[in-house]
Image 1: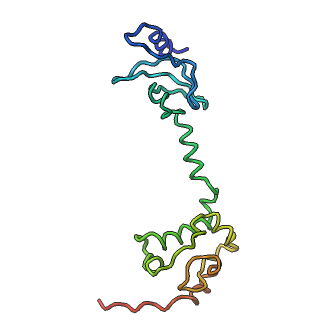
Image 2 (image 1 turned 90 degrees about the vertical axis):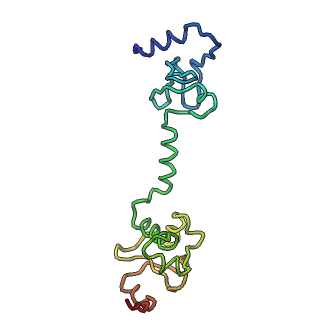
Image 3 (image 1 turned 180 degrees about the vertical axis):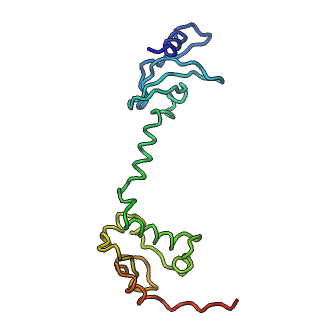
Length: 182
């Protein structure tokens, strides 16, 4: 046992002016309270805790009792990682295409918004979830293909989209806008 932990145990056994609830050995989420820790200024009692992942951390008694602290931070990190890794396809070409569609239709700051979202082109409700987009469109059959709307004035939806070459897409473009005089 290290010197700091021995000191904390010794202090926790010392008499106190007010009743102190001993949390030693109690489990709070993934944290097991080991011993009292020195207070870090302010009010409240601190405790040395051992997390199920193996990390140790000093945590306030009020945070333990209220449920605000249930791990050393590993639980939150895992939850956030799981949220970020819903489909496991974040680095695929299909995901990049899906993100591009969403940016052009939803992000008013996107350089092509006026040609998509600004014209009223929307993404079908189902395709707000990447997994649904991938299920409907499938994997891109060839790296040279990109997403195309069959009806250039139609929305991004399964019945109006296919994978097409850039040459095929150019044949399906709407007429260029007239240039304004400078």
